[in-house]
Image (cartoon, rainbow, N blue to C red; front, side, top):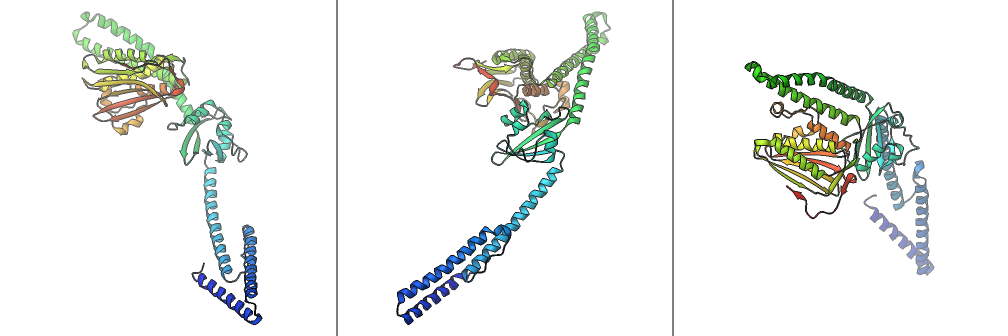
Length: 441
C-alpha cells in the first residue's frame, strides 16, 4: 500500500467534514448535515466491502479486482498483487512436485510415502512390485496392504538399520528388499528394490558352500585318521617327520572347525526361526561358557567377572545362543593380553534382555566395525595365524541374533578394549521369580 495512504485518508475526511459544514451552514441543521454525510460515507464503504467480498469469492477464476477509488483502489490493487504472487509460488511448487513425481514414477524401485503408517503416495513401480493401487489405496494402513507377518513385525519394531528381504506379496518368485527411513513427525519413506537376481546368486552361493562343506568332511576325516595313527606311532616314524605331521594335524583341526562353522552358518541362513523355542536359563549357560573360557585361557591368567540376573530367562534355541555367546567370550580370550579382564553381564530393562562381553584387550579401529560381522573379514590378516580363528564367529553371532529377532552392537577403542552387546527383544524374555541380588562370580 502506498506510504501516503494516511495523508490521503485525512484529506478525504477533511473534505467530507467541510462539505457537511457547508451543508449545515446552508440548511441551518449541522447535526443532520453530519449525519447525512456519515451515512453517505458508510454506504460507499459498505459497497466497496461488498465488491471486495464478491471478488474474493471469484479469485479462483483469475478475475481482475473491481474498480475502486481512493484507499479502496489501493487495497484492491495490493490484494491482487499478493494473489498473483501466491499463484506464481503455488505454480512453481506444483511444477516441482510434478517433476519429482514424474522422476520417481520412472524409477524401477518402488517409492512409498507414509504418514503414521498410512499410505499417502506411491509410484508406478509400487503397483508392479507390491500390488498397491493409486489412488484407491491412499489413506490405508500399509501393513494391511503388504500382508506378511515379517513386514508387520519389522515395521512395528521401528529398528530400520538393516533392510528387510521378503518375497513379493503378488508374486513369490520375485524377491524384494525393503528400506524404511523416518523423517518429520510420523513420516516414513520406504524404498522397495527387486533383488531377485541377487537373491538367486546368494542362494547358489549358500548351496555351493553347503555342498562343498559336506563333500570335504569325508576326505578330511580320512586325513585326520591317518595323521592320528601316524602320531600315535611317532616313535616308529623318522624323527624329522614328527614336526611336519604335528603341523599337519593342527591345520586339519583348523580346517575341521572351519567346515563346522560353515555348516552351522549355512543352517542359520537357510531357516528363518530357531528349531526350538524353549525358555533358556541363560545364567547357567554363561557359567558353562565361562568355565570353557577359563580352560581356553590356560596360562594367560585372565580375570573373568560374570554378573547375571539368575531369574532372567530367554525363549529361544539354547544351542544357537550358546554358539553366539561363546564366540564372543572366546574372542575376548583370544584378543586380550595376559592378566587382562573379561567382564560378562546379563541383564534386562524396558527395551529387552542384553548380554555384554567387555574386555581390555587390543581394541579395534572404528573403520573396521561396520564390516566385522561379514564372513571371513579380517581386521589384520596376521591375527588369523596367531589365534587360529575361522573368521566366521561374528557372522554366526549376527545370524543367531537375527533369528532371535535381536541385533549386535559393537563398541571399541584401539588400545583400550572392546564391548560386544547382544540386544534381544523383550517379548521373548521371561522373569522366573524376583531375585534380591544378581549372580556375580
